[in-house]
Length: 503
Image 1: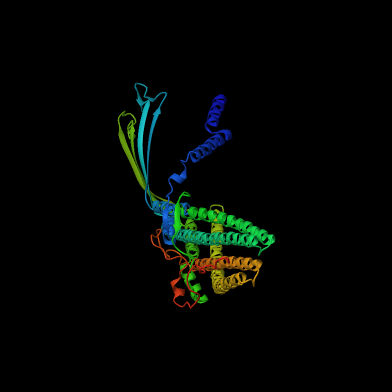
Image 2 (image 1 turned 30 degrees about the horizontal axis):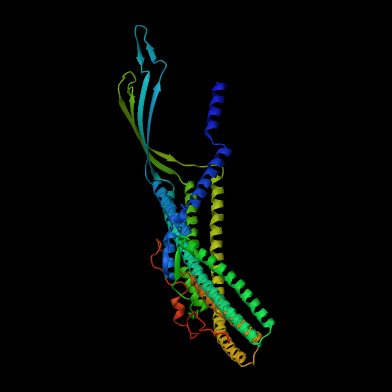
């Protein structure tokens, strides 16, 4: 017997894969993935490849279909659907089917002295159906169904939050690409000016009106601008990569952004923004629903103090006949009844579980209160950032006009011999910095609007939405705040034409 058990144990041990085998399989899977990537047959081939003009609205629509993070969160709805089915199952009957065969070494023989006869048969067959129907489980059945529905609504809010996060990330990446394009264009333009200035200084040196030091300084300026341009080009490439990743499309996409960095003034009121946030933020709805889920879980635990009542029955088909063992024929037998079970004492296990669940419920309430404070903080910071960005745009608009005018005047002075070449370079450098700051101000204002839009919970579908929307509001545009907006700098992305280098 010991030898048999040892052999069985060794056989079972051999059924479980070893550590080396598991890691060998994982390594092989990673190697195949690398091979597919090297041969160009990777996930990029199944991702959509975009081309042509791409608006922010289109980018968001594409992301809502192809975003990996959102598609992963959507599985929460399937989990909730499965939990609802499980809850309904608590109220439905359980039906089991069993079958068996038994071989006896010998049958029982009844000896009556003058006669004897066998009872049963060496071959015994049976089929049995068992049915159990819960009638009362202390109120846990309706509580479980209610809790499952709350969990389903909670998963809807989880998806709604994920939708808003995807919209925010795509819009932010879109703005980043716009800014990177503008900053790169500024550096390209600055390089062209620096090269034109170098040619101009070289011509002046050959004419005897400039010294070699002026040409050396112009060459240094060209090199410095080239370095800045390379840096901005790298930032632009990284911004495109982030946008394609956020939208869930192929990195091989070739698109041109159709929208521009624009200034859209908004004047939000703190109380109105808080009202919108408290009525729309998915995090707050998640907190409210989580409290209700935990309350139903507590009710289910309290139901364990009550009795359980169930109806049961079974039907048996057997050979030999279950009613007459001497009859080697198929026969049937059935039983039915009602069973009451009441646990009077279980060693304080129920009390322990109730204490734990009450603590979880209190944690949910505390978490909701903390989330409300976080929402207030985000709304307040969003309004402050928007106001700062608004002032920044206004100031940079004025600085841009001054920088353009300063360059124009110094170029005229250089042609007339009043200003030096160094002053021209300084004015041009100041204009380049000012243009970059202007675009950064527009970008900061757009991001501030976007952040406030998300802080109010209006960046996506409203409360109770049970699916991913096909149409979404324009990111960064809160209609409640646009109506009261005052006058500001002209909307647009460009600072105007640049002054040409002097001759």
